[in-house]
Image (cartoon, rainbow, N blue to C red; front, side, top):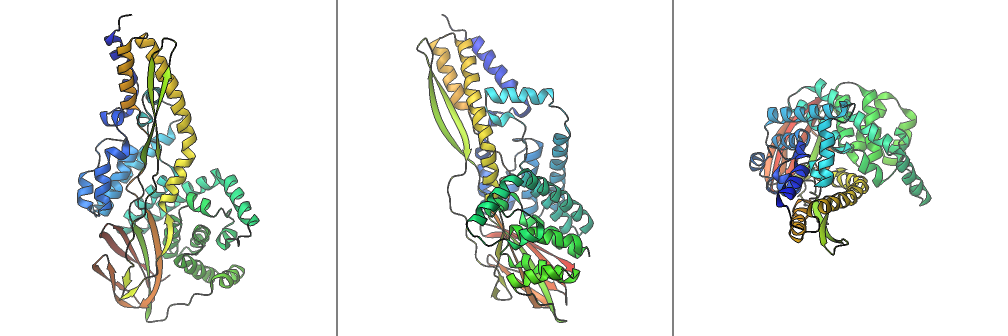
Length: 463
């Protein structure tokens, strides 16, 4: 039978155009991590200016593209641009969540992605990414001295966190039961916060960075009750972080929570109050860049009754094993700071992928069937047609590696009592000076990539 090349061209074009919502040459023949490799490498090297110049104009749509812009602009100290980009992403998320029914364009996108690849679907951010969206909106407000607006964002972020916990509560309770069966000492933070103690599972679901920052803001706003709620929740997720422990003890004492104080002191010891000549430094230390998803491929040959062979490329995202960047200790007033882990963003990202993987595998299987049906109907057994389809299948089967890839890999936190007055912090070979008032608390925020860092500080008053 004579092969109709025009028929094949029309068929392939319809497959692509049916997914026009995210249809670009990049999404058709490449995947997100590959398209943003220059951006990722510049950020890893700490070249914030170069990274800001390599931000995508349109790769993954209004949600993810603006998340990347908001984060990179923040590191490059383009704070108004960061705020604007994150607000655009927030608006796009709201519009996505408010859709009562799937729109016609979204239905077409799903059909096209089933025939081509998942990158043509609209991007739905993971729970942990939504938490970071509100966290960085909050940090923008803090940097701009707008504490009330920052509190609004942490409240919204807490809603995201609570929903994520409730969604996974049965699994967390199962993990807690397994820990108890192994004789692991109960997590006091989980007991106080009435959280299931899921160990690493809880750390992969809840963001202690967000919870701790929220508690600090409530404390600074003279709202100890809400501060204590979030300190306890942060303690459940990061039970060994001394900054979280000290904050929990401090507010428990202020509220007169005698029973909680007894348990906390028995477990962690006490924390001393500031003298008249002392102040407190709290350092939030972001480190590195979250791991980017890579592509895993497998070619699958299928044979039909006419003896024709079709090659179908199965492509899935995965996190390759790699060592995390190591950073030198922070030096405060010529003394090393004992900074402790608050949040492992890599762990949260890996957890999200594991939850999404079953759906991805099912869609891959459905796509093989859909593509094979189109091939049979279009080529009618013609060898040239089969060859063209093999090439098309191989080139367009791209894994869905979309994720917020400019987030930090990990976040540490530390709290230090100092003599009031000027302080000198050494970070990656540079010095940063700031002041701590008598009996006051100064928050220092920094993010380190490569040999570079972005640093600023704000006064939180008397905590």
